Image (cartoon, rainbow, N blue to C red):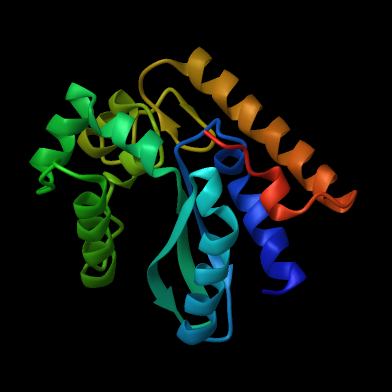
Length: 186
């Protein structure tokens, strides 16, 4: 795995690495699906002990869409009644993290549009995901890492936390902290 690849993971996945967010989703530059798969195996080898998993949701020329997540945190999110209701409505049998992630991956590969329920897999507040779907991405109160329909103040605090976490992780990495050392066990 190249230094550029590690920089991308840290820059794009710091809140998940730090344990303050369920997951991050980001474009991962690679020369092809084989390189992406090899890098994901390496990421999982380095981070599995910290409770972090990476999978490729889909691949487009020169870029994999990487889902970096904490399965335990996702399982907690999936227990919330509003999350379960929204995912059931979108065709997910909310019985296991693995089945839900596999359905999400299949939707990503088979649909031309981005499945809007993906916010639930990223730890976004369910009221914001529901608001996004019902309002067709319009009429939001505030926008940052996602479009906010519920509590703008709580979202601003989360956004600030994610930004400062990312800056801190990038600086620590520049100073020699390795990817596995940045990942917090949760």
